[in-house]
Image (cartoon, rainbow, N blue to C red; front, side):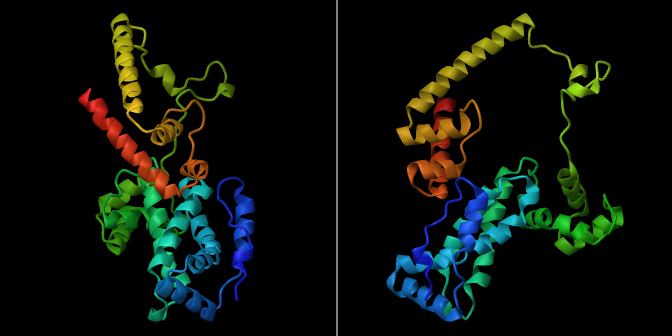
Length: 286
């Protein structure tokens, strides 16, 4: 019998190392224990059984999420999204199929993490079809087959395109996006007085009189419209929008707000999307 219920439920909000340590303390289930818990949840709707199935597989989510750290997104967010996928897997898991939950859940965990990355990674604008998503998530590993190659040649890009079922130009474009680097507009203060940064070559029209008046008028209209749109939201929706989008410092994460309102991160996402949609409608109407 598993003792998962005797341990506190770990939270991704806070210290990620402490969360990982807590998750790894949950014992692995034997096949018989897993089948018994899954049957209890399937046949009787036993929430405690589902909870034990989820807790015993948190380490799987952590392991999978670690493989996506190269996309520059917070580890905690990747884990949280993977946990949502794990819960979806537990809900659909049928032990009668003869497959262990660890194998069944991997698809759901990766699918949820993939969706999160595609929505949040700033460079991704092209990964809209199934084939392009496959390209996005496999290009780096496929490039590793060509040892010592920083940029794929035409023939190599053609080989990758054939393996993934996309066009060669799509491989070239995705490789360019993945290898892109930010260029500091203002340069490095330590470069010296004689150094020039990109900003030095740009004309500054901010203080042209007509532009100043136009900007002030536009800012006033936007400010009035924004306050009107925010006022139309319920208190919880307004708090979520302000914390996520109208902040002076760091934006609150979905998980921060989930902890604040004692709901799931997915519920916060739904509320945020609905609120933004309502605000967009009000701003367009104005």
